Length: 434
View 1 (spheres, rainbow, N blue to C red):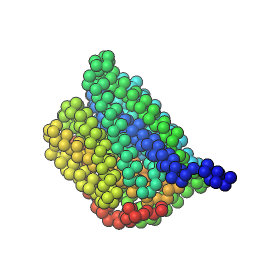
View 2 (tube, rainbow, N blue to C red):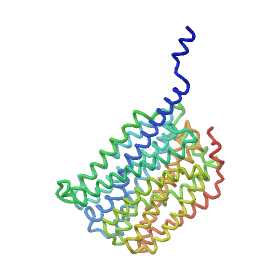
View 3 (tube, rainbow, N blue to C red):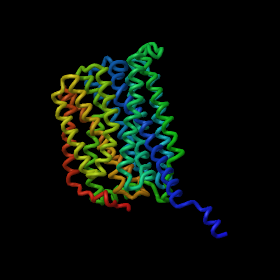
């Protein structure tokens, strides 16, 4: 009888295989959220919205004025998330509700994106706040998406899984952008009357794409256990003191704060920058597509590079590429130069972002990831609050969009210098959570 009972028990290797399969399914569902929300990033945030703002919603405004207003809208969305993310992250940790808050912010973004399709010509005063609301959905949801990384990836998997998440985002966002570009450039192929109607449809399909591909996360990604710790403003201030008291985390976060500001601002303002230089709209969209499809394999390769040489050196390589890009922006005059810069950005963008996230995930207490990633994203959004204003104000004062974009070189250099002095423990042999 004893032998018979033992024969009914699952073999240890079979049990491990089942656990591994469950974890891989959770990792794919988690990465699919980036596939989902990056459609908003490519088609709306950095693609169609700046173009539609200039040519449809605000054609009578001076170019520098619309750039300033766009910067204000981006900054306002970032400021709201900056103020809310740490507190909501702590609340989500306490109650075990990271997925719930991700869902609520996703719903906000989906509704805001769909509403853009209803705004008529000359409606920039309405389009900008609706755009800001949709952006809040993106930024707020991203904080909880980042926090869920620790639910699907063991410490030794963090670089790879984080990189695959960004790669999925670039591939999904790029595919949806390609569909929408064809929709707008060739509306007759789809039985659509004109490019304006096609753009409205694009806003709606982004909303549907975002909602649909976020759903698997709620089925396959496990929720963190509640911490049952207080989550008021007093506790948040205590968390901030605790985070900033950790010298290693503090140094990394200051460096991250500077360079992620510049990356986010480049991402948000690149199409507007090219439009102000008089580059054809088709060329701008092609460059944006190029970024997505180059960034897809580049993010995966950067994840492997991080495993080989360490996350910090790999991030510094990416930042050196961005320094070159922002310096060369001063001399940009032709379409082919814009294509080269777009290709360089695609090579470095996803790698720097994914390795920064995975490095941070290995420096923090895993059971309080929502709270710590709320703080992480607060810094990112505070940087994004400053960056667009820096570019917008500099461009308005100097009268040159080239000088506006090149002002980001200061942030890249400062961030890289500070990161250089962050002496990170060997992440290949272990981490602070193990």
